[in-house]
Length: 233
Image 1 (spheres, helix red, strand yellow):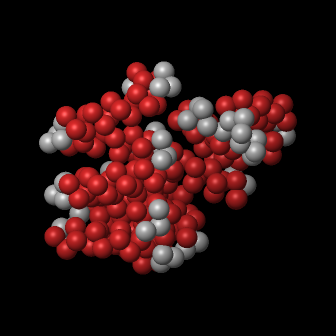
Image 2 (cartoon, helix red, strand yellow):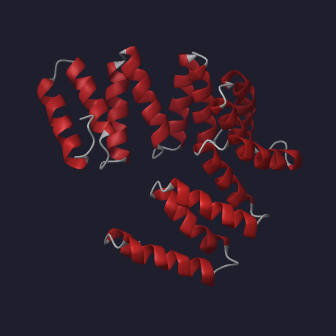
Image 3 (cartoon, helix red, strand yellow):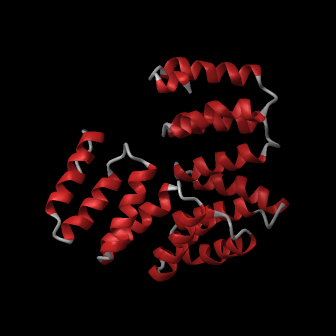
């Protein structure tokens, strides 16, 4: 953490490599490098790292599930399905794997098929924010936006620091012209990620639509300050 905060990423990565080697029997230790890649959005490195970990620790379900999630993000759906089906055969009610199955179906354009699977996950684990979020995504993909909004709001309530439901709500609000929801979602995104532009942009859109041009301009200037290479602001 010290090296990351100092911007010394090479040293941070070496510490994590050392941790993986020295703590090879400790799940917390050997997962740290892959989780570091994930936190930095280095998807290719994360996929390679978790592929290696899955091979070395095939009984570590947390590693396997994380690896499946990465495969889905990388659109390697056949391999993700194969690994996830193994878990579901052994544990048909595994909530995480049901959510992963729902994600795969949404990616395959089968949101209608994903809804009952994700609904069963929500029923089994009503406090699981990911289940609510992806059920909302499935509803949105089938144009059931009222149910989608309800699920996204619940996901945001359960995990206030989770970006995805707030982003989904903001996008939905921008489309439908719900300025109150758009402003609130923008504010929440700013709180969660003050160094990202999108919260300021969503909030600016709400203020602009309400006629508050000075407020919108201030938001957009802040967005340009925190993300000078982002063309959107």
